[in-house]
Image (cartoon, rainbow, N blue to C red; front, side, top):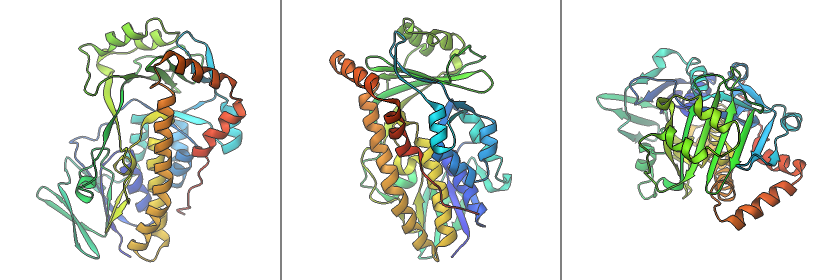
Length: 385
């Protein structure tokens, strides 16, 4: 088996894949089109499956030290009534850890710091991937040409590599929701670690960080491409009657810090995550809506599973077949579940449907809710040691 790889994309999934491959002895180059690897983004929740993957990559403890456990909170109505309470202690007892909240920039930095600077090719875009022969694959980045035994396409939801490998695939589609998010400029007095609030066609949520700041997000059911001249002022207008601490979170935010993205997804599943000696990973393979908070966790699962397969199988071909067989069914099932969760959450707007949903949530025992969460969180990674 060969031992050189090119990872296209320097996001969470791409960096995790590079770390995993290096841990099994491969020489790895990460190609990232951004001229500077900035630690940007808002916040992220990491469930047990993602944390276990990070443990196998050797960065789990560092991430936990920078995170805050989500023990308290839950789902509320805009008036502040509780639909469901979070029992982080019960979840920790079941899977060994609560969900952890961390700034996305911190997670990205901790992953990047695990790689030597010379393995990062920044400011270069992969124009095409070529299978030269059964044993070599080439990545062309302008005038730079990289030959390798394996290419990992982790270039996100708009993956150029995926488009090249699957030209007939329809690609990402708009989910019907747009999201605005930011990290507060200063600490905010919060009584819970994590909350979601569901209104009619709108959602507001927050993740508390260990330094007292918080990430918040607002999800709205709007036509694709909708943008606001003053996003923060627009959100103050839409959410000013919603319960505390929503107004306080908005007031603690700089206008320039607000990010606004339409939520796209790969609604049509890919028929395979591998073609020749190229493997798709993360959003390039299975971009999903954020309703279960599993996007990054699934990418981390991908990274560890790919490295483990390459470490134990006799050939790259056999390893990629195993990767596809293990990752495609699970990640596509999680994507379907996330889509369904969105339909039953923020996407609901009819008053009767909202009332029925709210009643069902209030009547669902917390133990049953924990069991539903465990379907996605209770994943055990293959060992890389």
